Length: 156
Image (cartoon, rainbow, N blue to C red; front, side, top):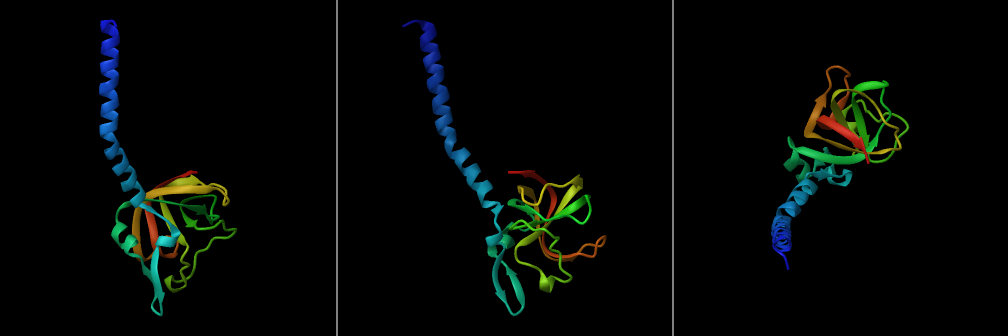
């Protein structure tokens, strides 16, 4: 066996051991990202006579970067800086007049800039900062309980 083959084998062994040693970090990073993933089933803890109550997970993730998958409801305008993320494809915009009537399977998504939107039947993943609590948009008058701000999205 030549010296060149020994160096290559040693380098390969060192690289392999480095990869194996780094696996726990890769796995823990994937788990951290998965923990910040949020599904529609995880939004609310219970419904009472007082209305919807946010889940412990939503309370914990409030103000943090999250990822969420769903469908884009048809927007009111062809280009806008926000849209509604829904659990199932919808043919009409699901905004309600008050937060008391707020459906438990939608989240408002505010983008950094206006964009042209995707088809309502296309699954998308949204990433942005989760914000909870009743809020009225001063520009549109829409009321929301949950929002994802500074968001970006892509098709899945």
